[in-house]
Length: 166
Image (cartoon, rainbow, N blue to C red):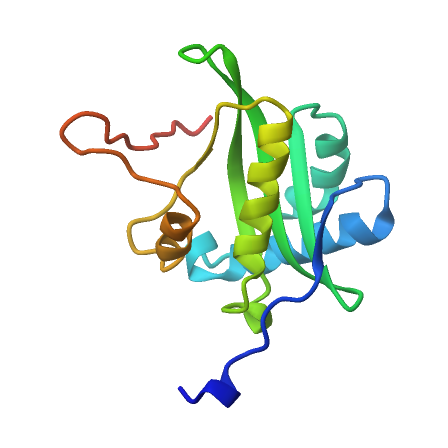
C-alpha cells in the first residue's frame, strides 16, 4: 500500500464514558452494535432487551469503566471494562470486556489509544494488571501483543475463558 493511501493516524482523544451524558450513552450503544454485527462480535444485532436496558444497568453497576475515542466530534472507538480483584496480588484488576473501533476508522491507532488509556487509568487506580479475552482468529491479537498483552506459556499458565449460560 503506498504511503499516501494509508489512513491518517488517530488524532483525537480518549475520554471516560459518562453514562449520564446522552451523547456518550448513544455512542456506546452505536459502537457496541457495530461490534456485535462484526464477525468478531458474533455477527448478530444486540437483543432488544440489551438495547432497552444496557445503559441503565451499567449506571447501576459500580465496577464499570468505559472509554470513548473521539475525533472531530465523532465517537470512533469504545473500550468497556469492569473491575475485578486478584487474590494473588491483593489488588484490583480491570477486565476489558469490549474493544470496538468503528470499521471506517480501523488501522489508525484508535484501539491502541483506548488500550493505552485503560492501562494508564488502571495504573492510577492501583491495579495489578489488565485482562481481556480474544478469539484465536481475531486479527486484533497483533494489537494486543504490541500493547503488552500475552497469552501465557502453554506449559505453565495458558488459560481458556470458559462460560456457562444461565
